[in-house]
Amino acid sequence: MPTSSKRSPLGKTRQGLSHVDATGQVRMVDVGRKAVTKREAVARGTITIAPDALRLIRSGQIAKGDPLQAARVAGIMAAKRTADLIPLCHTLPLSHVEVELRDRRNGYEIEATAKTTGQTGVEMEALTAVAAAALTVYDMVKAVDKTMVIGEIRLIKKTGGRGGTYRRT
Image 1 (cartoon, rainbow, N blue to C red):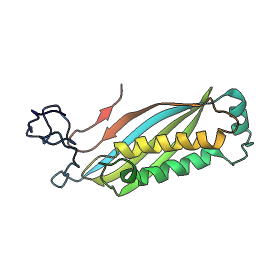
Image 2: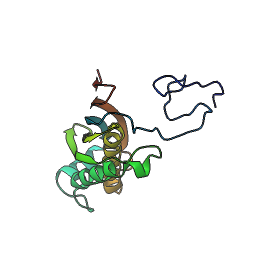
Image 3: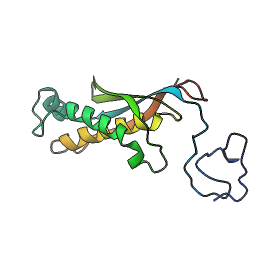
Image 4: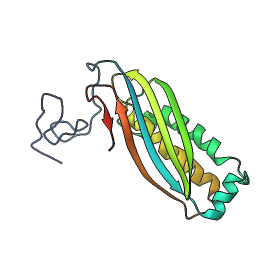
């Protein structure tokens, strides 16, 4: 733990971690003085699936049902419960969450968009939605493919707030 962390005018420690106080203790950031703005975040990830399992998914033959529809619902539900899963996240009133699964040659690309009007961003909600959607596909297909790989979960874009717009290049 850092012993010489000092606060900057932006409320961050010298190391730039706003969730760590001057003594190195983890804390929840106070967003009460931040401006309320429209905020949006987009995250993406992938799930790689064996060819035989992909054929079963795409032909509607997975015994548990349609993993893509279940994954969409799971992603939306997870975004809404992010603060219950990630200890220092604020509970946000989400105005919209969308989860899309796009066919790829070796599996699916998963994209989640989360929106709110508030004092803190929705990056964690979008990222959590992607992770939960991918895990749901894995759960529903694991009986026929235990080699699946979930990966490349990353923030693609965020808008709103003091930080402005971020786009992954």
